[in-house]
Image (cartoon, rainbow, N blue to C red; front, side, top):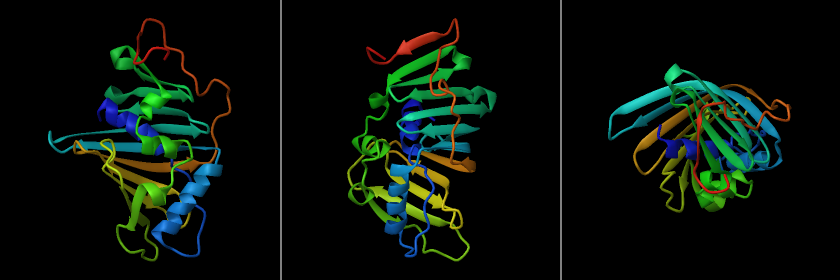
Length: 223
């Protein structure tokens, strides 16, 4: 996965909140619940598996780790395996640190630089409106005992986001999978397990101090 795609992924995955049950099963109703739950939820943590593929190059990779998110705009990603994919991505709501131990490198970004897409920025801050930003549809009609699968097509061209699909557990109304692609033909899938609606409360959990000796690259002045 390219660095640009990874930063877009960070922004998109901030939206993964449990969905409240709804009597009328329509994709619009389900996504309205996503929006409402996001607006009021405090945080969550989950085990994730990431699979990425670049069609043009015929290349693919995968990684496994833990993700944590807490409003407003605080997050921590811990990529654990494979060893060559090991990294940490941490945001305190103002800055984002991307630490790659194998390279001895820390990249530092302002959070608004990471969330450079207007659509992503609105959604991340709880201001996005699915009905306004996306055309929402079932990928397949709901079936008893099967997961809901919803396609979201951006109404406005977004190079970082060409298509987005959510797979939702019909019993728990938690997001099981998130698939998306960009204009360059890169495709990513995140599969989530062990989801908990709580996050560590240690005050420094969403901060990052570069280890001694690593190179720190600040992408913008003041970051």
